[in-house]
Image (cartoon, rainbow over the protein chains, first blue to last red):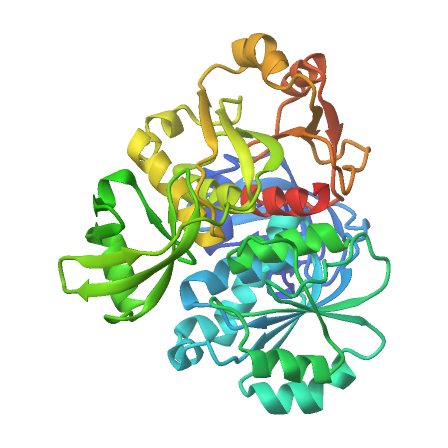
Length: 236
Length: 236
């Protein structure tokens, strides 16, 4: 946690916050913060600054907030269209994409996404939010990336995606595509990344029909979370 | 598993292999391979080709090998000097670095590496090998990256590192460095990545003394495995 992220519910009085639960435990046990210490804090959807610890006990952490007047880091102009990963991988991928500064994440169905993945408790709204909050805390950001669930591949790609991706460079990661992924772009990008085992050819064709160019980053097949970070590192 | 990796101990007769254990279960349950199916296989430190399944039962998988005459993908000319991650993270980072094609990995001590990390059973030779094998299977590679354990920061950085890094571009990832990490290099690189919480200043000074330039990839602080893949994606 490189930033303690505060929500409106944490603000108990003007300039004062009280935290319980996970964040309180983390600040006590990992940061080993004591009364008088200063922590880097940010307001959800707001600015970043520092806060002073004025009380710490097992149930609560009380903070006096300084000016939270520094802006969060800019998002990348990047929409990620990601075939829904296995539940075990989903949490890490959401936190990782958020920490990298992805502005919008679409979780999309695909032929090689097992149906059971859509029924995982990890798809609960609360967990999807929590993983993105962890990514913000990691990166020192305060603004949640937008999240869209698209449970039907074809209607999403044919009807919703063209509008969503309008005005952006549209790329689909596809090992063996032959075309190398471009580098160091300044323009907005919509990047589609397939499931374990990859997109099937009709899916690549649908994406091509929606304006996406298949690209690759070499002969190695990478896990979703590795491919995602490597592609972002290359694109921006 | 995008490649079934065979060791010399798996070769029971010329052109025949028998597998048990994890790989046998994986091929049966995940690939759902049956007699007559063809699998992509590679020989450890050797070539890649295909094999036909001739027997599959709960204990063993028998394969008849074709010509294993395709070369593995080239390694990146990259040595990674990584502050030893938390045990929980170590396995993923080793597999991920291997899958990305890193040629050599040094696990290094640092001020913010907890002493207990060096006593984790995950540092057993067998596990360190296993995680790299998983990375090879993921990426379709057959050559293990070299692995070096450096339990003392100063002697390693002052005495061993200059020789190890000779003739390479030496970079240390350091958020706030001010200098952006270079892009799209063709030359060999030695890249140092710090622990959670970062390098302390005397460590950065030691690395600078060994010829390393501090670089950054933006204002966001990333987890080790995310930073690693993003940096590799940017460098090559």
